[in-house]
Image 1 (cartoon, one colour):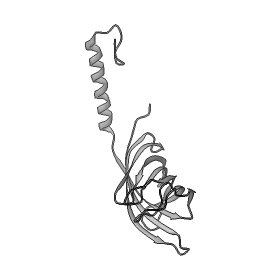
Image 2 (spheres, helix red, strand yellow):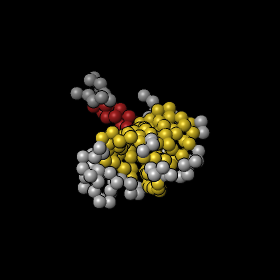
Image 3 (cartoon, one colour):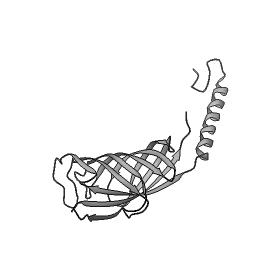
Length: 186
């Protein structure tokens, strides 16, 4: 029986040679791809551009900000620096569920899309993971569109600040460095 790289009438050696050649071509293609780093700050203002969908099933544990099971949907602005008045680079939309049933910190399971529109570059990154809000946390980047089509990699987040707005809302600033590689089209 021949493998996917062979044929039924080919000798076994030819099938193995085709498999080795295919593996070498994949390694060469991967070596040619270059990692890009996209840095941005996320301006998270709870109560303005975040909506609680489901109340917590249990109250927050000591040392955490959210109760287990709380679900939120959000759209946060991305900026060039930690200053909310700095250049807007896009926005991040997604959902988060508090999963800190026994954790010593607030932990959210996050699924979101980074919408990048800055200096003539447009595209999205799809990412998922746990945000722990202790430095650093990491999301997997598993796809993209536009300038980031076929992106894959990881995004490292770290807390910058937490403060109250004049209207007594919570404003959290986080910093992200998305390390991505762009794949080839099919």
